[in-house]
Image 1 (cartoon, rainbow, N blue to C red):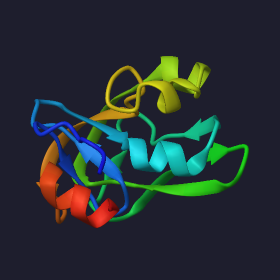
Image 2: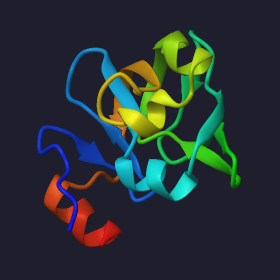
Image 3: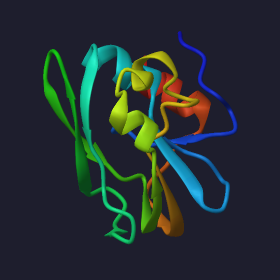
Length: 122
């Protein structure tokens, strides 16, 4: 079973979010591995209002295009331009420099602990 950072919370759609203000959102190593080589990211724009559990963008890989779901509700305050410019960082550092966007959180969806996510992703 893979190890997932315990300071993060996870969605069943394989996104993660931290508890910082603003919160950082990314995709898990499970999603990155399943996608294969990520070649394009479509992320929400700064200033966009997003809702937990809704589609807010896309991740395109050499294998497929997958929808990106938001694990939280709030307002997008920053996008990771470095990841947009070099989407491969999502594969190499999904819990680090491969983060996707930051959001001022107004509410959270149903989130899992690292242990619960590991069982879900199992």
